[in-house]
Image 1: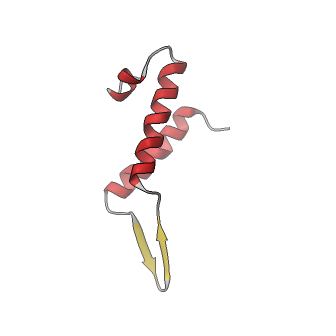
Image 2: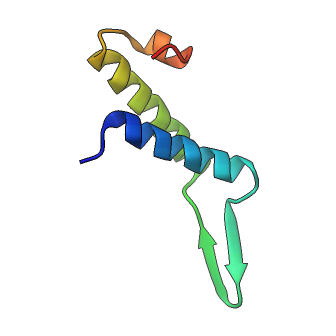
Length: 67
């Protein structure tokens, strides 16, 4: 089972890929669209909050990147 930190890393990689222009692509007649950025941002915030709580912190510090 993936840890929260591993899940957060995957979400952040997905966000970075989309922000760099890889939201969707097409090959021949097939089109692939990755997850919605808003959904990924919400998941990132949720994971940061869960990690912060597990470490005895709170979401404020998680949002500042001080996990």
